[in-house]
Length: 216
Image 1 (cartoon, rainbow, N blue to C red):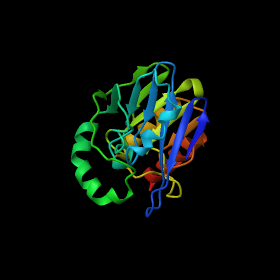
Image 2: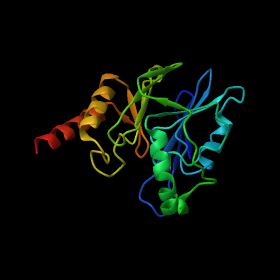
Image 3: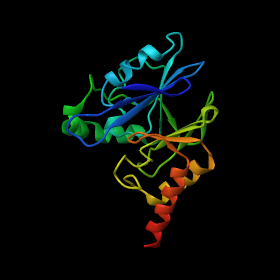
């Protein structure tokens, strides 16, 4: 299902059969580019967005991190640029074969391992979007801020729907810094890959949970 969640910002939600989670991918149609955030479980996730794109503009893909459900569809169209955060390419290489062997039954179309050609290590601007390295869930986490629409795309740094107050974490201290950064951006709406969009108040709740975790 595809719906417009803000002006020229679209969400595609897929519910794979046999698992207890769903996956959101996104398209932002800017004046200068069609910007895809993650590529889902196969090429269908990209292909179903194409009718919403301006064919005169280049397509750009941004990966929030290297987990399989965020990267499998990246041959769904031609991309002028593929952007991720270090160490995305290393993690993708390490994880692809294992993830495909285990989860191939839930693929949506063709599956490919496509690396990023632009790796970000610091805050980076692209038109009205700002990219922030945002580790915690993984080492290569990336957040996308769209201040004109009051949106912050956080990938899996927001907890999955119905699975508690915190996501799965590799590094709690790094995650705390990511949430502090997210709060400082004062976005109206925060958006995750496995949950409904939420108000920025959700970040304060996450921070309270982290504080409680540290006090135990």
